Length: 353
Image (cartoon, rainbow, N blue to C red):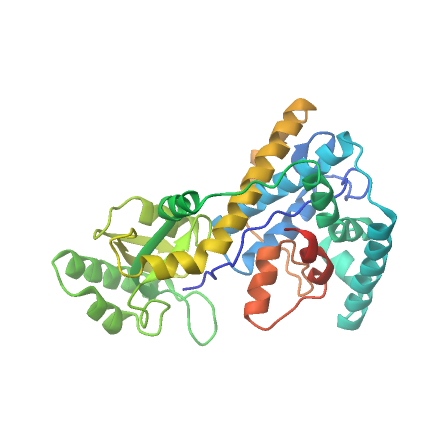
């Protein structure tokens, strides 16, 4: 499966964009306005580039919209509350901003990166400041604690367990989409698999026959995921069926024949899977509670959010960049899992949670 499980869903905040963002024009229209700050298409695409690494286009756009809005609300609230960074944090931040730019120079040129992505030097400085302002705002409110029962209830409500057969429409050699004729063949094959499953054929055998070497082929517990972790189509398909039912979903990578499996205390795998996710669930619930407080503050200060749906709907292409800055600690967890460590994350992610 293309989508990668993230170890945590952590919030990131940003400084004022009004002073450092690209100016809007017909080639770089406004996607969103938060308070008095306008977010341009090139800035929004920077989020898209980050999420596109791990999600399909639909989920990348959804997550980009969510976190771009979250981050900017944090910015506007911090501005309204006149939040100041202490001298020690400012000093560390300046050193880190310099290290970021030095790393780009080693990779092929910082100025070229800015030009290719239609971004500014001030915007990169702002990104490096992200979690400093999140951390400062968190000091203005108490971090909630959750009971074991609350964590377990979240697990049951927000996690799903499935097995699936993937009939891919991606050429394994080139990574490109196959021809329309081959896509039609893939669809017919997927429909045949769905019919066999609904007629009672063993689903594990179908996985081995039609979709070997996928994430759930060797795991008897199946594939377990939570909200916004897979593509929109996959998640909505799973949510449309009950345990032990089947559905067919089309996505960017092909056709998924999905069997939803039960996920409750009656299942032998429940305790193991819950323990694997308990820390992530606690972090997610704390972040959600923090953002709810941010929204309350934004209401108090009269900070409004306006999304330009016409521009958003036209964003179908991602600006390519091999020098993406990852914005969130969940991506840091991902990179650590894969023994990679993007330089920009070293400072930002150490103070988010």
